[in-house]
Image 1 (cartoon, protein in one colour):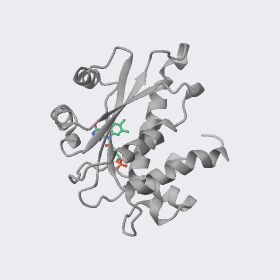
Image 2 (cartoon, helix red, strand yellow):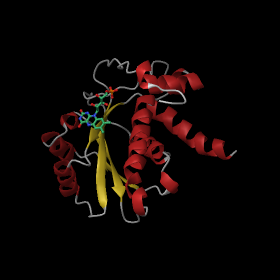
Image 3 (tube, helix red, strand yellow):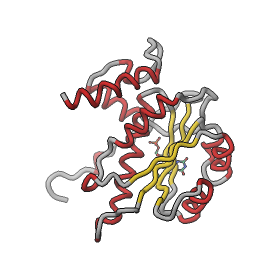
Length: 204
Ligand SMILES: Cc1cc2nc3c(=O)[nH]c(=O)nc-3n(C[C@H](O)[C@H](O)[C@H](O)COP(=O)(O)O)c2cc1C
């Protein structure tokens, strides 16, 4: 029952976000099976060119919920999300290090919140936690028919300073990644990255 109560509003949001029309193209609309989930993972690819169609607030909300559904070390959820929709800010990001921002309709900046970090060697798990959130956002974006690209920030200090200064982030907030978002301009072919050589069973 709990599972259903979490999923029901999300499913409604996803369907409203992509319009639920017969030609929508998102994997959620094609089928709601395990096959669709795997297909969504396998067909995601970086998209860096976008149309000027705006992204609704409901769609952004769906992506943020997907991000915060990610696993985190000791369930610490050490993150904050900055949604950027102002053209001037997106243009500043494009003039900095991230060209896809020039045509993006929005960006979500996934930040580590080091206000209350894990102790000892676990301190840097925030990087994995925020990376998991980033991937969830990419997958959710693809599922609703958006194009997206993960743009790296931390640990490149120049990039971190640029983003922190641009948005006035406090010391304990570290931008890890920026996800640029927009409806895809043209078709993208996913890369086939499967290599059997990368896999070991039971021992090296
Ligand atoms: C940590 C990280 C940093 C990245 N930084 C950038 C970036 O700054 N700009 C960019 O265009 N793509 C960036 N990417 C996207 C990668 O280039 C892309 O994922 C990779 O080429 C594989 O292609 P695919 O996403 O289509 O599978 C980054 C990806 C990761 C995981």
